[in-house]
Every structure is written in structure tokens, then in C-alpha cells.
Image (cartoon, rainbow, N blue to C red; front, side):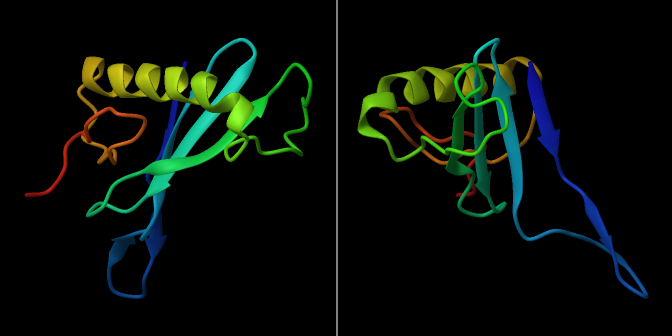
Length: 103
């Protein structure tokens, strides 16, 4: 399942995009999100084991034991962004190239 947010914030004269926005990929057991701006791209931000931590209290993003699972979810998110033609800028991570990067 793909989740995404790119909200607008109200300015008295204009609608402006938030500086940072995120995308996420959720499987039956895990939730993975990236956060970034339109220039450098989303970087790994959160990874939760929803089976062991349903209230998302322990972010496992920096846990070495979770690195392989996080990389797999990053790959799935990247593939889904391509599949859905999402223009979200994704930074390179886990040996995978970035996506929709500015030149």
C-alpha cells in the first residue's frame, strides 16, 4: 500500500508547498517512510514493526539488525513510485539510485 502527503499551507496571498514532504510504504507487518524536500529528495525516516509495536513508539530506522528489511521496503517504495508515475524526488539509498532527481 502506498501512502503520500504533499500538503499545501495557506499563505494570506498564495498557497505554498511545505518545505518537506514524505512518502510511505506499508506491508502487513512493517511501515517505512521517507522524508525530504524537492531538491535533495526523500531519505529514510521511519521504520516500524507494526506487529511488535502497533503504536509506533520505537523507530527502527537506525537499527543495524533492520537494515535488510528497510532496504527491501525502500526498494518496494521506489518501485511503486515508478509504477504509479509519482514525481516524488527520492534520494539514493541502500545502493539504489535516486529517482526524479534534479540535475
